[in-house]
Structure formats: structure tokens, C-alpha cells
Length: 529
Image (cartoon, rainbow, N blue to C red; front, side):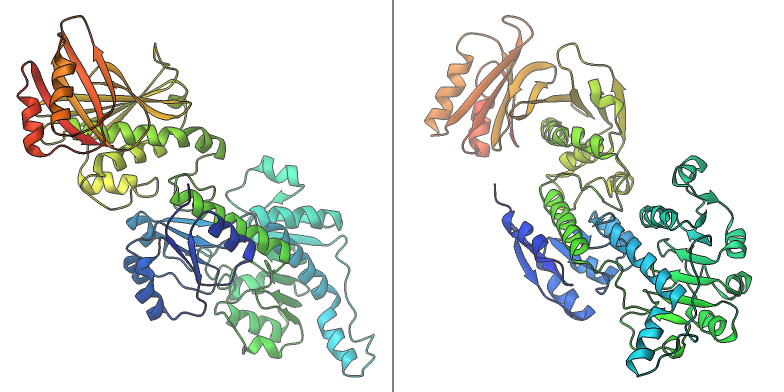
């Protein structure tokens, strides 16, 4: 089914990604170079926002984005997005951490080689009509020690390539195991030791409050005078003022930078130094990387707008893709069961208990918990509820939700039951997944079968006696209300039973009152799924 909604792209991305969005039925607008004020003015009408590194998605932008469901960064970092503000609003922030990994790693190696052999400077000299072979004496990288700060995806790819160049590899990353490092042929060391030993140092960490200014004057002074520094990660990790001083005074032999604390950058003291190689944030600037990144974020935007999990949601719990793939269809089951339960519950909602049976119980059920809360609140709020902000909303609203995990149900391999305590008693709804989608299979412990679909349900508890179904059907026919299907659950003959009728049109309060007045009807509720 084609999707609806407007997507705003603020920075250029490959047209493959734009086409993917349009094929999904989304209306895509590309508006580049917007000022913060202009973005705040126009963002309220969009359901998704796609940026690269230039556009700043600030808290005011997020607050103004009343319809926003997802913000996508077509790249690795998200330092230009206020993730905390997005999380508070329940807006999923996604990025494309794998699309440009190879390109960034290759650019790192290219900068290292250019730095070692002074290739840019030699090129300029020769173009000026000079033949200065002695001036541009370089160094080999073979046998040299490469210090890698950050063994994430890019750092690992750099390590693999440097290994092929016969370099000795050491790394600083407190979040990587010794086993992982050994697999890469890398020795883990403390930062001070890395600075002391390395001939080349390359940075591959995100920009956070912890890493901002990580390489400052003290760190530069601790390096070898022959050391060379490379940064293709994020500007701000290296103190640029201190780096200028280090290069001028010979604390280190050279530096190569692809990123800067302020971008775009067209003037800087670094530009006047001969022992530095500079590129304008080209790490991900390959045709292959841009295509992969654009498609990655486009597919995630489509997934989020369809209510499905995103592969790389940076402000959602880290759940393995195979788990998300398994749980995704059951999110509709959980939401449907919760929505029906809250509508059948009488009076103030009390404690909510959620039971997971079968294989479901062995997984992280955060996505299912989010779907339950969304179903509970769907009738009273328009705020987005998802894995990103479900626990925030639970705390904010003072909801009391407990989860229970058990073995397979005696009838169903996988089952979700939502139980709500209220002044009128206990309301329970169970659901499972069938070949055609989510089915409600139990209401207040009466076994029924409510198939997928949207619309109105008339749920009646009544005495199981001849003529009950006919009485209700006759009354609805008199009101010209069409019944699309009916299902009955009972515990025993001539006992208490549950009648569920799907209606093409809703009943008026007067019509519902008339249903309740039919003899032996104990209760009748109109709900909408």
C-alpha cells in the first residue's frame, strides 16, 4: 500500500535514495541551504527529515516538527542532531554507519600516504615549474607503528588495510575486547602509550563530550617529533589551535585533516603550513558510499513510517536485527491487544500486566512493550510512542506496567496477553500472529477469533441461549447497520458467552443503549480497532 507523508531533504543525497522514498509513495522535497529560522518555519508539515553534516537539527527545530517521526543522518555521526530532544519527543534518529565505512577507511590510508610522501606539496611545486626532488624526501610506512584511536567500523577497516602495508598496529579503545583486537592483529594500549609509540596516529572516534579536545597540547607534546597525525573522524576531537602550534614548532612532523571544528572552512592558520595535508570533509565522498548511504537512510525512513524497526536507530535500544525481524510482526499484535483491552476496561486504568508466551519470551521485549503502551494511549494522545521514548512516557504518565515471560502456551506457540486492572474488575485480551496478520484470540478468557482489519467492534457479554444472536442482528438491521462478521466464545452451553460483531458503521449512543436493553445482555461495548 502506498505511503503518505512529506519528507524534507535538507542536504544533497544520492538520487537513488530519493527515488526509493518516492517509490514508497512519499512526497519528497529537496530544499538545501535553509537557515535555522527557515527550517523552524517549514518543518511542522513534514513526517521525516533527512540531513547530512551541514544542517543543524536543534531542539527548536525538533519542537517545531509536530509531525516528525524520524530524523535521518545520511552518514555516520549524529553530532549535528539534538538526539536528547528527539528522544523526548519520541522521534527516532537513524544514521547510516556502514555505508561509507570503506570510503572513510580508504581516505584515511590515502591521507597517510600523501602525508608520508608529501604528495600534495610536491604536486604544487612541480606545477610551479620546480623540480625539487631533495625537498620532498618522504618516509616509508612499512615497519612503522600506526596508532588507531577508536576501533569502530572505520578503525577496523583502517587496521585491515594497514596490516597489508606491513605496519605494526596498536590501538586505544576502552570499549573493545582483547579478543576482538587480536583478531585484527592489533595490540590494545592506553592512550599515553599509543601517543608515545606511534609513528602515525589516526583518529576514528565519534565526537562526544568525552572525546572533544581529546588531542590537545599535552597529547601533541607527548608524541614523537617524527609522528604524523591523521583525523578523518570529526572536527573538535583535535584542538586545532594547539595543532597549529605543534606543527609550527616541530613537536610533530605533520598532520592530515579531513574534518574541522567549524565547517565549511575556507580560511585557517593551518592553510599556511607546508607540513599539513587538508581535504574538505571528503571521507565519505565516493559515488559508491553516497549511493549506499542514501539507500540506507531511505529504507530506514520508510521502515519507521510503516511502524517497523529501523536497522540503525541511534536513540533506540540496541536490539540485534534478527530479533527485530522476529518481533516486528508481533508489535501489531501487542498494540491491537492493548488497544482493545483499554477500550473494554471500565473506569480508571490500574496496573497493566503483559504476558509473553513462547519464543517471544526469550527475546528483548522492548519493542513489544512500546507497542503495548502505544495501544493503551492511542485513544487519548497523539504523541509518538516507540522504543525510543517508551520508558520516558511510562515514567511521565505514572503507568504501572509489569512484564512476565513464560513458556509456550498450551494452544499457541506465541501469545501476548494484556491484562488491565480497573474498578470494574480485570480485563484481559490475548493475541497471536497468523498467516494473514494479527488475530485477537481471547477476550476476558473467552476464546474468540478477531481477524486483522480496522473498524468497529460490538463486544457483548450475554447469556448463551437460543435467539440471542438473532435479537442483536435484527436490532442492528433495523438501524441499517451492516455486520461484516461475527464470532462467539463460550465456556459452556447455556452459560455466559461473549459475542463479537464487526460493524461497517458505528452505533450511536442511543442505539448502543438499545442493544444493552435486550434481555440477557449483561454488557455491550463499542470499540474501534
